[in-house]
Length: 197
Image (cartoon, helix red, strand yellow):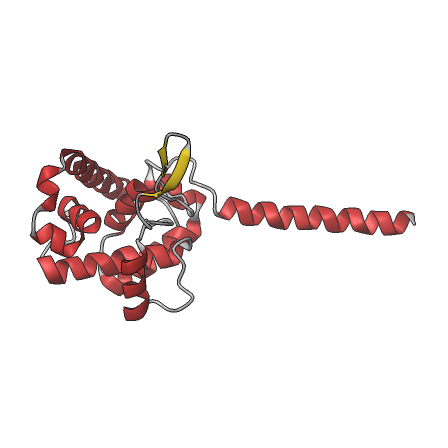
């Protein structure tokens, strides 16, 4: 009987370690404002970001800056619930995951370059999605990859919305786009002094 309990105890400990390890891989980086720190803590993210950079030619700092401002690097991020008095009546959009991709554009991504198994709460798929979106933004609206300010406006308003300058009536969005550009510039400086491998 004692041996049985001992084996059960060891099995429980191993299962707990596996579960905690899985949870920690999805945890938010401790210092998200420092890209070196993010990549040192989550070295698989650097490998995935570098892979996407080789595939699309888009600077890593630009992609990660957009992701940081969209979700704070939270894998299951969603827009806040809207309320009427005490009654919830849904979220502001279908945005979800690291990249805060909405249903329609995520489906378009999966059809073009992703797969049936692509997930918005998967870091590799999210990085690839942002790169794909930025590549299309350059083709459609001619925005250079270093111009993260205008890439973010495209990301938020969509390609047609950007063409129609819908962002002009949204001062709050212009402020965020400036923040995203600043973060991208800071991330670029940090990457130059990173010691990752």
